[in-house]
Length: 499
Ligand code: ADP
Image 1 (cartoon, rainbow, N blue to C red):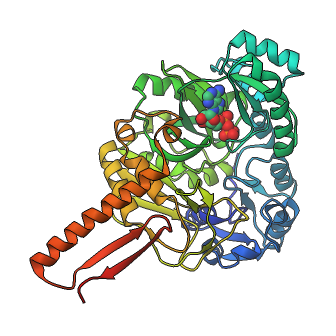
Image 2: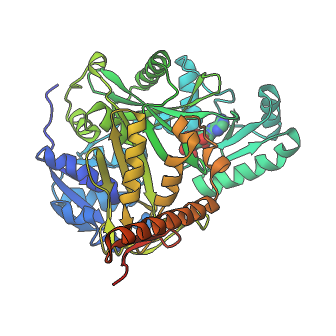
Image 3: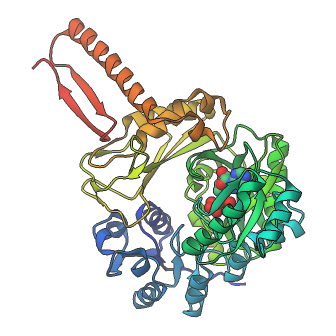
């Protein structure tokens, strides 16, 4: 098969990921087309792309989820491919079909592979057939309560009732004992209907203290599949990842190999092509079970890029052009350790409520081993229409402890005002002894985090810096600068003393 050459890509997304895709495309000599909602008119992803087109509107359904508008823009701007990023339409097989029917290349898997991994029960059935271990439970949607009761009894409580089409950490209900089952079952069904448009639910055994570990894969059109190590994503809030690292401190080379091979097997069974992630839960005895497959680029992909020294977006584009993978499994060599902190416009002191407003001061951290994938700049308006992820702070260190120290320093350096952010929360995670020891599971945040911890550490920091400032003044006279943080507002300013 002769590779096609992609010359112009429409990036069907916004924020940091749209900009991140633009950068790789641009380095490959490929033109990019951005799309934007009214609120995003002056966003960095729009400013940087070679061309940009309005989607007219703000609601996701009228903009970044509107298949027809997006395909029309791709045509009008003479694109030959679409990159969906993550979220929005990235896992919608109808969007893949619309893209390919319009004669454009979809930079991602086929709609068939996406469909086979899209529903959680179908994916579980496929994995069970491929001998990939799955969490005990059903591989089909439950007919009724009687069936649910029978399954729950056979696998034993606690169980999870999950929406077949759930996502984003939503649509899960833990049931501790038989008395709670009937009510939970009917609530789970109606929640699933209202959030995901389908009443289909299934049951999984609830694992008490697992870790979330996922394997990155790359598969080309020529049957080559490789895995690029794992990402540890157990630091989660409401089942959503907040801090990720590569490699996991828990895996031995043997478990890594077995998980990698299970992921490759999973991918081969559904004829998957392009980049994808096979997610697993690992129990306390280190048994691992297939959780789901994400048929797209993940938010946390940069930690893999930092450790394996390759650009996953470029790899996706090359695969979509029909090129063979440039690496064999033997050539995949990890180096060092990387951590990512997701910086959200949320207030960690107020139950993580989304924070909106204009970004005033903005000074991201810099220096050796620091990567900052951001979708904002000074003056950006943070609105409530979309996911509150502002940017991703990623660090690389020669080993895990250097990487932790670097992240701590990078978080201290990162200044933003005008909106509250999760920077102080990330600093709490990174500095926590259990995180430093690598001794954590999916309950880390609920077990150890309380907003008081931020206030207390802020007070301690203020006392320490006051003490340091007075020492300094005593030492060398007047005019020293002291930095004052205000965690609750996410603000910062430099304050001059003694003048
Ligand atoms: P989503 O598709 O909404 O992201 P997942 O099935 O991928 O949902 O699970 C998200 C998170 O929920 C997991 O990382 C884990 O923390 C928790 N979880 C999911 N299934 C189980 C389970 N069977 N037992 C315990 N925790 C689970």
